[in-house]
Length: 242
Image 1 (cartoon, rainbow, N blue to C red):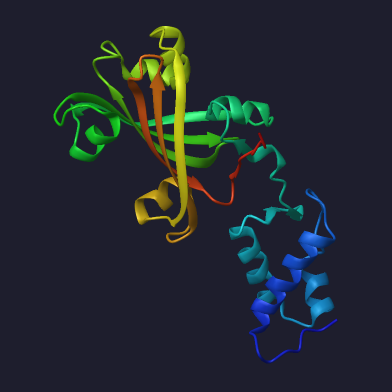
Image 2: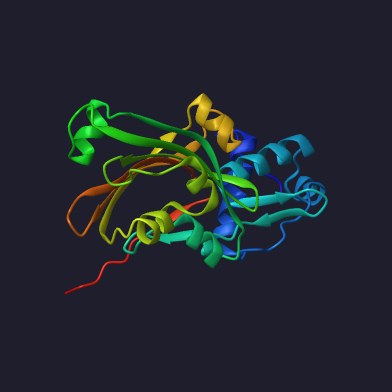
């Protein structure tokens, strides 16, 4: 079944054709035909087929495994329910993946204007700024920059964050009971420095998240700005009719 339309580039036509098959015929984890088989089936060069598969991979629809082939991506274990308390570590463990966090930066600084406004504190109040790279099975997933009020976490050290998850520190070490975490997210494109950390091309699709966590005294105990790989995350919201 060759692709012959002249109104759309052959490469784009193949991407669309494979996209349709993935949505209608294949199940997560299914192995796609080889590059050679796709080349013969659609009457296209191996180079065109390889580029199309690369595009599908960047869209998060397939996963290419060296020496094994191209598989339909399975996002079932990656959907994060925004209605519940969010923990990257817990979410990845529940999905059967091995989470790991790299602390890229840890400083005590004066809160800049926007951070202070978001946290309900004064400009210049002391905050801990923590920059972290979150990985699952050694695959970079998310880049986070968190701000914690120094008044609530007086003795916090970098070693603490390297030793255990942030939410364990907040809830267990400092006995802060979380009341609510507000999170908003929107689609964006990765900047050069973000792309380098996440192992994706500059300009790749990402999700930007802004999270504000309050304790039972309505004090903001965490304000986090995150950049998540769009090919690794989906977010699910459940709506209940009253």
